[in-house]
Length: 73
Image 1 (cartoon, rainbow, N blue to C red):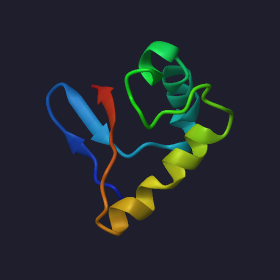
Image 2 (image 1 turned 90 degrees about the horizontal axis):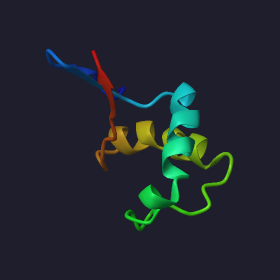
Image 3 (image 1 turned 90 degrees about the vertical axis):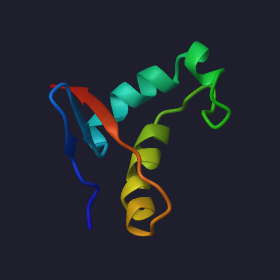
Image 4 (image 1 turned 120 degrees about the vertical axis):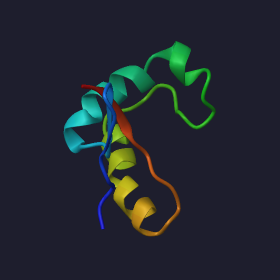
């Protein structure tokens, strides 16, 4: 089972890919963002984004949650 892709006229919601890790690290590593979300460590070390993304598929398969990337069409 894999995370579904959902589409609207403007957006695509899809599971995160390992290639998204650099974007996640850049955004989550920003102190202004990390400061507003208790679960984001700061500093956001190398490898944390990859580990976080790698856990998504198991969480979805075990009905524990789903995380989507939001992409403009």
